[in-house]
Amino acid sequence: MCCHDRLTVTTVEADAVRAFVAELRDDARARLRECVERDDPCVALDGAGRCQIYDARPLVCRSHGVPIKTRAPGHLPVITSCELNFTARGPAAADADCVLDQTTLSATLLAIDRASGGDGARHELADVLRAALA
Image (cartoon, rainbow, N blue to C red):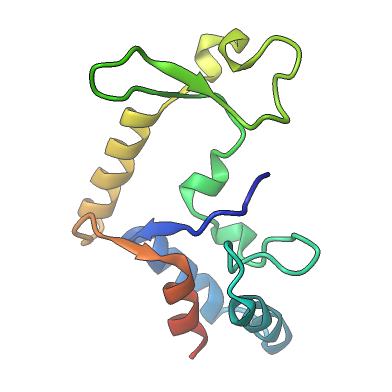
């Protein structure tokens, strides 16, 4: 099921999340604090499964569900997607222009992170949100 993993984010993504949280109204901050305190796998989801940081969600969330090509060292490329998508013919049947390449996506995000002053380190989303709400 979507959105049920513990997430890590790059520094540039963490900065975007912190900036978003800083602009939230008090009631929205309180709702987000409740989510974070529950310490569910994704601390940004409320009890109904709605993302409380949707406008600043990390790239992994934005790209979830689309077909993604991955390749383990020494193995052939594999195209995967959310099991709720492409149920008739599978994700490999998606138009090639619609398939994201994980290596390219990760390298691009790393380059953006470094160009923005990050060092490529990953940060637990839960920690970012706890600090932003403190």
